[in-house]
Image (cartoon, rainbow, N blue to C red):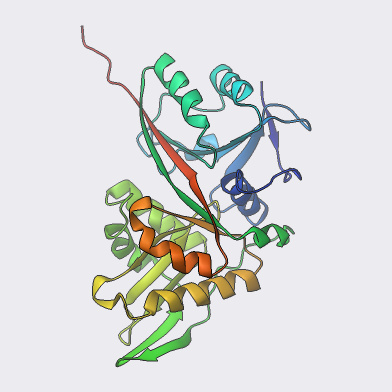
Length: 291
């Protein structure tokens, strides 16, 4: 048995909860991805799961849509909750995201009992703890970004703006966790419904960008190779963070260990780093034998 709730639990804290916290924030602010919140009990919950409503998860192979966000205060009870209820559709290809690496052992036990293949990705989480002070008043999320000229150097004149759907293929082609048709549809949905940020060249083409997902995470960030080491990514970061704080939108991000050269700039900007603080499990049902 589980409960569906529509309020933000007051006991959430970083760095364990940004995925769930951010998802609930976006539910309160218009719920553009049609998510819902489930708990094992209320008000004394131990495990919180946010997921798309069932009518959203119609494609059993679309792991980008079929994504669950989990926070727990009791790993054993969490495993029992996930195993014994219909909170998760284990017959689909799914993603589970969370900021507690300790979930790995529990999810692998469940996967073994249900004959699922597991792929675990763990990266460094970066958060600004002051985002907890941002308001959670209900209302529609502001996604418009006024065009502003912000950078003029080395014969470059760039405009800070938001992405539009015509830029989705460019973003998807440079996203390591994308590069397929289902991820392209996901990128389009993010661009159409959530804050996105880019720098446009004089011809109106994006050369640096970042996309917010339905949990408030800043993802898919990229600066085209020929424009790197020119300070362009820094200007995008500065303008993006200024906008998010101005509009009271919580945010966080993750960086792969192999990209340690990016860590210093984030830490200097006031981010706190948490190794193994961002985790994603992709679970795929194994093909049944014909014999």
